[in-house]
Image (cartoon, rainbow, N blue to C red; front, side, top):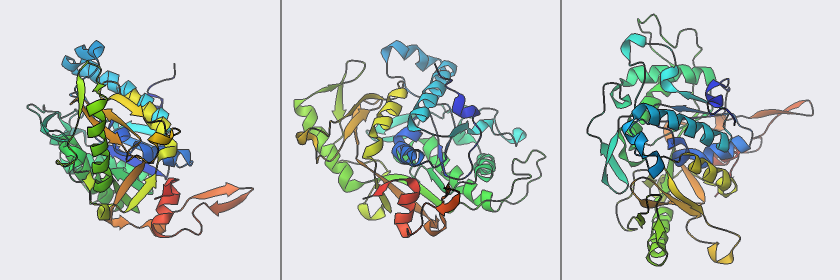
Length: 369
């Protein structure tokens, strides 16, 4: 069996795509298809995870004991993310708290802050975050650690949660603020008095493109409507034997679902759906009932979704055939993206002749929709 920690020990790649997420599984759920598409195109892909998801709920009955054993759950989720990232084809992985520096100003380990479901698709703070919770780590401290990794990797594209944290989880919201600040610090960080400043000796780096994974509302609601109708005549069951539901298509949607005009780039990600499914299956404590439709069957073509999955709340979520990105203002310099490759002894830019958002799509290795 391959080493589940191999990517955490792999050398950091230079350039490419760099994702920052709060817990194991967020990378797959939030940007798995974009990361896999880039990796398949030969683009270096690195993911940084803020916590090990110690307070996550546990779905499979045979693993229920992990719900009351945070350390063991963290250990299991480390293995899960290792398997998921290998499935996606990524280059390297790091947990944010393993970055040395600022030891006197932060906990040794950043732990999951926990959450509570407010309604389907929206989470809020849990009852007890704990003294080491990531959401309690000062933005400037966590961001400086992350900025050191950005200076080492020097990525051209950074992906992270949108301002609402995808669906409101406090760690997701915090990782958004931390990443936004880290990108600023990587380019121009004021000095600090700490002797163990992680930025010492590292040259500044300006990230050209910073993007947030989002879904177009019209597509998302159409998929929810299809799921509503599907479960009426074809009930779906979770690992606990419970009947899985579908969110109302006309109800509230997560913050990652935005109007179509707010989606800057839409990619066709159907070629990487098999590896996405493998990565979703890898996160077995958090994700259940993953299914991809058989698009070779005429009746399953042209549908508003290509599959579905469910989290611990028992609500089916659609897998769309596209991935959307929203570019952060001021970090949308797609014209600066380059991808030189040596072919037959000559250096050529793979993006030659591309412009605007077509250039970003080409850089990520995907087809623009």
